[in-house]
Image: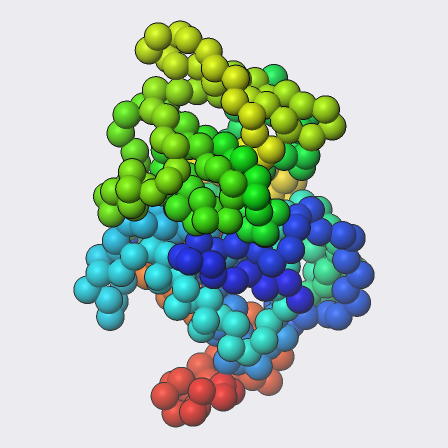
Amino acid sequence: MSLAVFHGGIHTMERDTPQPETHDTETYDIVIIGAGPAGLFGTFYAGMRHMSTLLIDALPEMGGQLIALYPEKYIYDVPGFPKILAKDLVKNLIEQALQYNPTVRMGEQVTTLRYADAEQRLLEVITTCGTYYGRSVLIAVGVGAFAPNKLPVPGIDEFEGKGIHYFVKDKSIFHDKQVLIVGGGDSAVDWALELHERARKVTLIHRREGFRAHESSVRALHASPVEVKVFYELRGIYGNGQVQRATIINNQTQETEDIEVDAVLLSLGFKADLGPMKEWGLPIDKRTIPVDRDQSTPMQGVFAAGDIAGTTVKLDLITIGFAQAAIAINSAKTFVDPEAKLFAGHSSSMGGQGH
Ligand SMILES: Cc1cc2nc3c(=O)[nH]c(=O)nc-3n(C[C@H](O)[C@H](O)[C@H](O)COP(=O)(O)OP(=O)(O)OC[C@H]3O[C@@H](n4cnc5c(N)ncnc54)[C@H](O)[C@@H]3O)c2cc1C
């Protein structure tokens, strides 16, 4: 099982992606696709209902949009929290989700979902790293799989994995390195602050003056040894089998500069894509899958919750995703085990052990 861990508020993977081909022969009661808030809460709920659970996400980090798009923003409309930072809500959701020891596969995009048997009781979930089997599936893919934004700059593709990074999976690889970070959001600023003590030098370039990051982080950045260069853009990456040099340009004066670097971290945000989901044979209407009142999709044994679920009243809110995940898991439980009750009782009566 590969688990994501928190490092100083930034949620990273313990090991490198892409992961090796997996050979998982277990048939899970439920395979949950997407580790955003709906998928994470669904994972907890499935554990509470004694369902063996596999959670898969294309990103190396859990949290969906909250981590990919707005980790440092406060959320004000999650019941029980007058306000909470998105990354803190995710931290709590992960703690809650992992307590029943689900299997977690991060950094794997689901490419195919289909039946493995003629009776349509066994579902086959194929990812970029392996094939898994489930008696039911919860689709909680939100607005689609996130992929990092890339730059059309010479050398970027050539040196991917040879000094060009989009995620920090292991901070130790930056030890004593000359690191160039590109970007002006929370992730770029947080990583500059996180890496400067370990690296020989950290330079951060941003094409504008203003940063889209938390005010206190930007203040800390300017007070740190990180060399911050605003109005600068990346023009080229060069090296000999490994990144050795970057050309940057001042977009105000058009002057270029060559700097020695061994590692480049591109923190340029993410784009979401429903991508291969369009081939799963499910109807997709306005980027959603139509669901019934029990969150079931037209595909037997397949349920949907969160932003992807096409309900009559459509509200893309975290709390709505939580409720839909609870309904979907209870429905999936009775699908997998027709003897089981839809409503197993209140968690407060279960002593944390579930039914
Ligand atoms: C800037 C911003 C601010 C917001 N503020 C609020 C707010 O204050 N309150 C509120 O209630 N809501 C807010 N929202 C909306 C909220 O974030 C979403 O409703 C919520 O994230 C949806 O959760 P989800 O679990 O359905 O999907 P997501 O959070 O989108 O997570 C889906 C996950 O599925 C993964 N995935 C997708 N496709 C695949 C695949 N094929 N294989 C593997 N994994 C896949 C993705 O990588 C992702 O991690 C905000 C949204 C944005 C963009």
